Length: 185
Image (cartoon, rainbow, N blue to C red; front, side, top):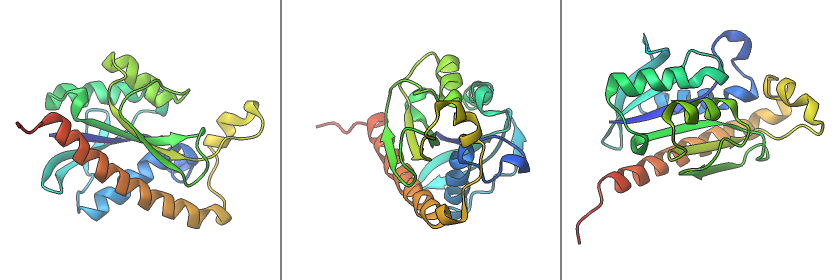
Protein backbone atom coordinates (compact mmCIF):
# COMPACT_ATOMS: atom_id res chain seq x y z
CA UNK A 1 0.00 0.00 0.00
CA UNK A 2 1.30 3.46 -0.95
CA UNK A 3 0.28 6.72 0.70
CA UNK A 4 -0.05 9.83 -1.46
CA UNK A 5 -0.56 12.93 0.65
CA UNK A 6 -1.60 16.32 -0.70
CA UNK A 7 -0.66 19.21 1.57
CA UNK A 8 -2.88 22.20 2.16
CA UNK A 9 -5.08 23.91 4.72
CA UNK A 10 -8.64 22.74 5.45
CA UNK A 11 -11.65 24.99 5.03
CA UNK A 12 -13.26 27.02 2.27
CA UNK A 13 -11.23 30.12 3.18
CA UNK A 14 -8.07 28.42 1.86
CA UNK A 15 -9.61 26.36 -0.92
CA UNK A 16 -8.00 27.99 -3.97
CA UNK A 17 -4.88 29.43 -2.34
CA UNK A 18 -1.30 28.76 -3.40
CA UNK A 19 -0.71 26.79 -0.19
CA UNK A 20 -3.41 24.34 -1.32
CA UNK A 21 -1.70 23.35 -4.57
CA UNK A 22 -1.10 19.91 -3.04
CA UNK A 23 -4.83 19.52 -2.29
CA UNK A 24 -5.68 20.57 -5.86
CA UNK A 25 -3.31 18.00 -7.37
CA UNK A 26 -4.60 15.25 -5.06
CA UNK A 27 -8.22 16.08 -5.90
CA UNK A 28 -7.44 15.82 -9.63
CA UNK A 29 -5.62 12.53 -9.09
CA UNK A 30 -8.58 11.19 -7.08
CA UNK A 31 -11.01 12.25 -9.84
CA UNK A 32 -8.89 10.63 -12.55
CA UNK A 33 -8.82 7.28 -10.73
CA UNK A 34 -12.34 7.57 -9.26
CA UNK A 35 -11.07 7.42 -5.69
CA UNK A 36 -13.55 9.09 -3.39
CA UNK A 37 -12.02 11.08 -0.54
CA UNK A 38 -14.87 10.55 1.91
CA UNK A 39 -13.33 8.86 4.95
CA UNK A 40 -12.83 11.25 7.89
CA UNK A 41 -10.30 9.65 10.19
CA UNK A 42 -6.63 9.86 11.20
CA UNK A 43 -6.71 13.69 11.07
CA UNK A 44 -7.38 13.33 7.34
CA UNK A 45 -9.90 13.13 4.58
CA UNK A 46 -8.90 10.06 2.61
CA UNK A 47 -9.88 7.31 0.22
CA UNK A 48 -8.44 4.02 -0.97
CA UNK A 49 -8.13 2.73 -4.52
CA UNK A 50 -5.68 1.74 -7.22
CA UNK A 51 -3.45 3.69 -9.56
CA UNK A 52 -2.01 1.66 -12.42
CA UNK A 53 -2.80 -1.49 -10.44
CA UNK A 54 -1.00 -0.30 -7.29
CA UNK A 55 -3.01 -0.04 -4.04
CA UNK A 56 -3.01 3.53 -2.74
CA UNK A 57 -4.39 5.73 -0.02
CA UNK A 58 -4.95 9.31 -1.13
CA UNK A 59 -5.15 11.69 1.83
CA UNK A 60 -5.53 15.37 2.64
CA UNK A 61 -4.58 16.31 6.21
CA UNK A 62 -7.38 18.13 8.00
CA UNK A 63 -4.82 19.82 10.22
CA UNK A 64 -3.30 23.14 9.24
CA UNK A 65 -0.17 23.00 7.09
CA UNK A 66 2.35 23.35 9.91
CA UNK A 67 0.77 20.39 11.74
CA UNK A 68 0.67 17.98 8.78
CA UNK A 69 2.88 15.58 10.72
CA UNK A 70 -0.07 14.73 13.00
CA UNK A 71 -1.98 13.30 10.05
CA UNK A 72 1.14 11.57 8.72
CA UNK A 73 1.74 9.90 12.09
CA UNK A 74 -1.88 8.72 12.37
CA UNK A 75 -1.97 7.39 8.78
CA UNK A 76 1.40 5.63 9.08
CA UNK A 77 0.31 3.97 12.31
CA UNK A 78 -3.16 2.96 11.08
CA UNK A 79 -1.94 1.48 7.79
CA UNK A 80 1.49 0.25 8.93
CA UNK A 81 3.29 2.33 6.26
CA UNK A 82 6.96 3.14 5.68
CA UNK A 83 8.62 6.26 4.21
CA UNK A 84 9.64 4.20 1.16
CA UNK A 85 5.97 3.95 0.16
CA UNK A 86 5.10 7.59 0.79
CA UNK A 87 4.71 10.51 -1.60
CA UNK A 88 3.79 14.09 -0.72
CA UNK A 89 2.68 16.77 -3.16
CA UNK A 90 2.88 20.40 -2.05
CA UNK A 91 3.34 24.02 -3.05
CA UNK A 92 6.86 25.39 -3.44
CA UNK A 93 7.70 29.10 -3.53
CA UNK A 94 11.20 28.36 -4.85
CA UNK A 95 9.76 27.24 -8.18
CA UNK A 96 8.04 29.52 -10.71
CA UNK A 97 4.31 29.10 -11.18
CA UNK A 98 3.72 26.10 -13.43
CA UNK A 99 7.06 24.38 -12.78
CA UNK A 100 6.84 20.89 -11.24
CA UNK A 101 9.76 18.97 -9.74
CA UNK A 102 10.10 15.57 -8.12
CA UNK A 103 12.66 14.67 -5.50
CA UNK A 104 13.11 11.55 -3.41
CA UNK A 105 14.81 13.06 -0.36
CA UNK A 106 15.99 16.37 1.02
CA UNK A 107 15.26 19.13 3.48
CA UNK A 108 12.07 21.10 3.95
CA UNK A 109 13.11 24.20 1.97
CA UNK A 110 11.13 26.30 4.44
CA UNK A 111 7.87 24.49 3.64
CA UNK A 112 6.24 24.03 7.06
CA UNK A 113 4.10 21.03 6.10
CA UNK A 114 7.22 19.22 4.91
CA UNK A 115 9.08 20.31 8.05
CA UNK A 116 6.32 18.86 10.24
CA UNK A 117 6.38 15.63 8.20
CA UNK A 118 10.17 15.28 8.47
CA UNK A 119 10.03 15.88 12.22
CA UNK A 120 7.31 13.25 12.61
CA UNK A 121 8.95 10.60 10.43
CA UNK A 122 12.47 11.44 11.63
CA UNK A 123 13.69 11.08 8.06
CA UNK A 124 14.02 13.20 4.93
CA UNK A 125 13.93 10.10 2.74
CA UNK A 126 10.49 10.28 1.13
CA UNK A 127 9.22 11.38 -2.25
CA UNK A 128 7.86 14.85 -2.95
CA UNK A 129 6.21 16.33 -6.01
CA UNK A 130 6.72 20.08 -5.71
CA UNK A 131 4.32 22.49 -7.42
CA UNK A 132 5.73 25.94 -8.16
CA UNK A 133 3.65 28.87 -6.90
CA UNK A 134 6.28 31.65 -7.28
CA UNK A 135 8.05 33.63 -4.60
CA UNK A 136 6.94 37.15 -3.69
CA UNK A 137 9.48 39.93 -4.28
CA UNK A 138 9.49 40.92 -0.61
CA UNK A 139 10.36 38.16 1.91
CA UNK A 140 8.00 39.81 4.40
CA UNK A 141 5.08 38.91 2.10
CA UNK A 142 5.62 35.11 2.01
CA UNK A 143 2.73 34.21 4.36
CA UNK A 144 0.30 36.54 2.57
CA UNK A 145 1.54 35.20 -0.78
CA UNK A 146 0.99 31.49 -0.05
CA UNK A 147 -2.39 32.22 1.53
CA UNK A 148 -3.51 34.29 -1.46
CA UNK A 149 -5.70 32.95 -4.24
CA UNK A 150 -4.45 32.49 -7.77
CA UNK A 151 -5.35 35.36 -10.10
CA UNK A 152 -7.55 34.91 -13.16
CA UNK A 153 -4.47 35.33 -15.35
CA UNK A 154 -2.74 32.49 -13.50
CA UNK A 155 -5.69 30.08 -13.77
CA UNK A 156 -4.81 28.47 -17.11
CA UNK A 157 -1.17 28.05 -16.06
CA UNK A 158 -2.36 26.59 -12.75
CA UNK A 159 -4.64 24.06 -14.48
CA UNK A 160 -1.76 22.99 -16.71
CA UNK A 161 0.55 22.71 -13.67
CA UNK A 162 -1.95 20.57 -11.75
CA UNK A 163 -2.30 18.21 -14.73
CA UNK A 164 1.50 18.04 -14.94
CA UNK A 165 1.69 17.34 -11.19
CA UNK A 166 -0.75 14.43 -11.57
CA UNK A 167 1.49 12.98 -14.29
CA UNK A 168 4.60 13.45 -12.09
CA UNK A 169 2.82 11.72 -9.18
CA UNK A 170 1.97 8.76 -11.43
CA UNK A 171 5.60 8.56 -12.61
CA UNK A 172 6.98 8.89 -9.07
CA UNK A 173 4.60 6.18 -7.83
CA UNK A 174 5.97 3.79 -10.47
CA UNK A 175 9.51 4.68 -9.38
CA UNK A 176 8.64 4.07 -5.71
CA UNK A 177 7.18 0.70 -6.66
CA UNK A 178 10.41 -0.22 -8.49
CA UNK A 179 12.50 0.85 -5.49
CA UNK A 180 10.34 -1.26 -3.18
CA UNK A 181 10.29 -4.29 -5.48
CA UNK A 182 13.71 -4.52 -7.13
CA UNK A 183 13.82 -7.22 -9.78
CA UNK A 184 16.35 -9.98 -9.43
CA UNK A 185 18.92 -10.26 -12.18
